[in-house]
Length: 80
Image 1: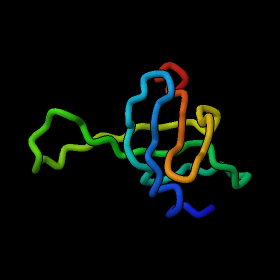
Image 2 (image 1 turned 90 degrees about the vertical axis):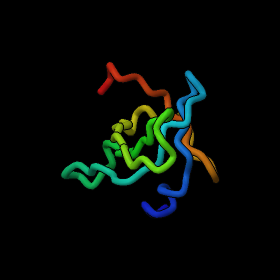
Image 3 (image 1 turned 90 degrees about the horizontal axis):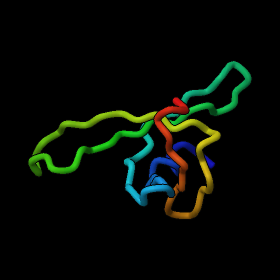
Image 4 (image 1 turned 30 degrees about the horizontal axis):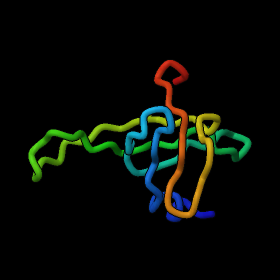
């Protein structure tokens, strides 16, 4: 699987059902293993033309399942 394949998947938190955003980057350790995914989160409630975006980090161990269209995660800020 390529990074471009992952970037097309919707990331959803299984505990809240919230759409978290899209993957924009990955963090790889010295052994070549993915340790984190960086997501671009668009804040809701902003003006439609607003470009205000925040970034979230998802640890590899927080991923529950990677499907054809979505990635399910168990997101807990305290684990970051």
